[in-house]
Length: 193
Image (cartoon, rainbow, N blue to C red):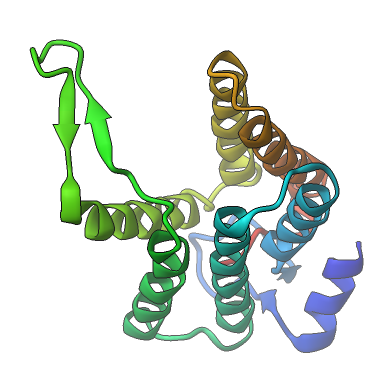
């Protein structure tokens, strides 16, 4: 509700201008900001914070600030892509990288990426960010899919004995689930960019 009021106050509102929109009234954007705030507060309270976790949070904050500005000013795609790449580079250069993939049918067991882990991880972060943004066309879809994905990662982290990752994924799932009641049809607020 607070983010909804902020969206109206700053003019971050989706006004239906064409027939492809399901809603007939103006709907505030910035729901992603609410998800991010819930996630960040929970992570800072419950997770063990180290340099890598701080870099992930810093990159996420850059993405969220970009999203807020895009919701307000409808930024161009090229500018958004450049800022997304820079935001993704923050955790990557702090050591958060996809260093290898494991393929059980290979005799070696997997593929090591070496220096390619840098561009691969940046591409992965930017691609997932935009994939979630693109599925945010139906009420509850992006937050619902994100909840399912983060719960899946939560259980994988538990099975792998990664307690801190489990806490962080639970925080993100909680942020998404807390947003869903406001995003079900008819949506009271949209996730926005």
